[in-house]
Image (cartoon, rainbow, N blue to C red; front, side, top):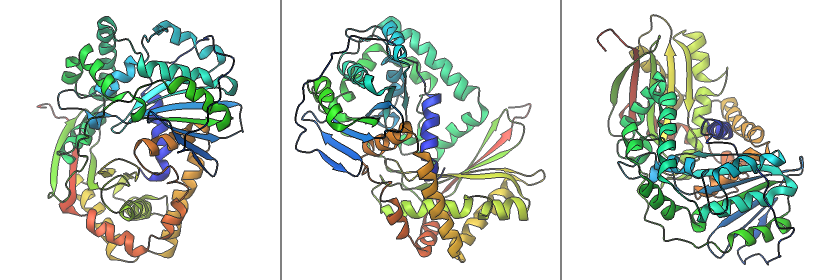
Length: 465
């Protein structure tokens, strides 16, 4: 999906990755002792950022439209960091983080926060695991107290691990095993990214989930849950001068850890055309096409990621875009078609096209028609209006997508946790202005070609399947 839809993508992850709601009322200290910000503190526009001595990065953004504060903590660990055979351990630990911790029980979580009308949850991706609390502005220290405590003092019990394992297995059944298109897409990811951990499922396979033990979770927790591997984000009706004494109070005492070397997130491209078929319990056939491409977090030029985002919009940016205009309305070949690509990410990702052909149109013909349309974009002229529309769509989507304090925090947290500049969105207009029509055609010609393509035909099951 295009970058403009990034916030919506992550917001949907928040809702579907929900582990549980939290509620309660602790005895909060009446005040925190002020401590001078570290020498790394700086303010850019309305965003304040600093790094504590133990490595915790803190980002604060003031938004006074409502008397609330969204607190999020982002750990720089996700499914891409998991060893083979331990798939889903990051997501499993996310569930367990809502269990007992020193001084607070699982049941206490049900009473804390909701007493003040707040909400809490968590989500896991390939690249990170994040937790959040939304509270009235005068109660934000509660979120800091909870997150600092469970960063260092989680208590893992065999009985709770066993119970939660069954919950996660059922979650996998609902999301993937009983969802034909999700099953097909899981197969597709494995085929399209065979050499990179991004091709493995975030939730893990059923066998991997079954094999995760309490000691595995304890080791994963101690390995990655540390201040020097985390980003704390606060957005809402709050001043840095008010927030930082509380941040120091709860987080200064936490000890950094020695982080392991990361696995490579590079997926070699142009491996040759790959076509596979998946028979599923679907009524109509559909098509999944994926090109291996870079993101802003890849070791390739950032210009390529910006240009790919604009190429996506030329092809699939609304009713007047090429796919909708030519493949659906003029040629009447497809019922639906869409592109999914985000420039934000660690390492290489996929530029995915999904389509459903009209009755009487084969998947082979639908695939060829899409490839022909892509080729036409980079071989023929891109109009000034197409370029302007692409830039406007990305920017307007960005503005509307970051209207809420939750999505502002998500944007800052996801950028920081993926080692991207937190002003990436602020500098986006200037960066997009440097992308020419020739740049868009160049990345299309280089990346969106058949020798860099994996295609899956999703077909209805037959009696023999």
